[in-house]
Image (cartoon, rainbow, N blue to C red; front, side, top):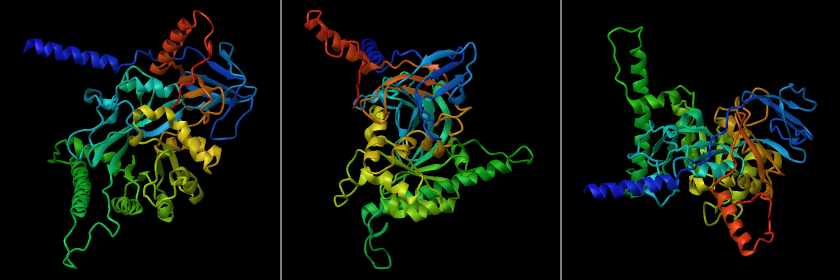
Length: 460
């Protein structure tokens, strides 16, 4: 038995080692840095050709032209390059899921269906191999979301550089996440007591789930009321701590939003009605049919997180390009939105975030809106726009320098800074590129290899 345990622990150690990145987090900024000569895209304003960005102590000091440089500033010439804020993926399980086929590398879901107390940030693996891969393509911020069950837990906005989960966390909790039940075309029930028809199994499950959601909010409100009654100013009252309902308090106090996963128009309408009844802030995740409920969403100021552009239509009779045109239709309807990849694409796809925005631009979304949809808009929707999302004075110096348009696959990220720390852009992908470049160099008997001296352009 002891031998078996030792062998099992050895395999577990090997598995953990295989899933751990050896990239060293960036050093704290030691002095002012001035990026000069490149085209600066603040996102919150017009582009600045041949602009400059000065940052110090992890914060942006000034963005513009003819910036007065401190005498001790380090100058980095980025002439011919572009400077952008770090890209923001507003919803994936990055840091919670490593290898889908290896159960020991997955920590994205808790058992049970009601888990508002599940905190994404404490489960994040800072040594994930997928973090450097996403970072190498300009994704420096992520909304890490738990999954599984009905009320899946609270998400966290993280920055993709740091030693521990505390280093990575920008905001937690960022939102509470809810999977809205599927609804039948004729409503939740088919028939019903009035007609004497039987209720379908799917409709019954939907009824049960909606009942469970109502009970969660009722119990959480009762807990909050009891907690207020048990305040120090009251006498003789005591409320036992309950982690589930305590996690709901920021939501009930409208400090964070409820992010509801819903694609179909009936789901969206039901979710908006529920949020209005409960007086909570609402964000729709998915939102395939959101343009059909445009007036309702605008009336209640409900933004949409579009979960992936490069996907199939929702229904067989939908136009083939309906996923590609969704952002443009939301923009045209005046609905606030941002673009992410969503759980269906997996954490390993986070690196492809800019190309989803690029497809939306190719199908009618203005290019500047496409850029905002993966930088400023997710920061605004998730309540962190005072720190990230654009290049503005006083915000975190979380930014990238690219060889060209960040939405184009031919562009590479040459420099990245997270809170002023220059981060390592190597990854498992670049190391494999170096490995096999050496293989072909050797096969060429020392002759020059195609791409010799070039930077790897590893996408897709």
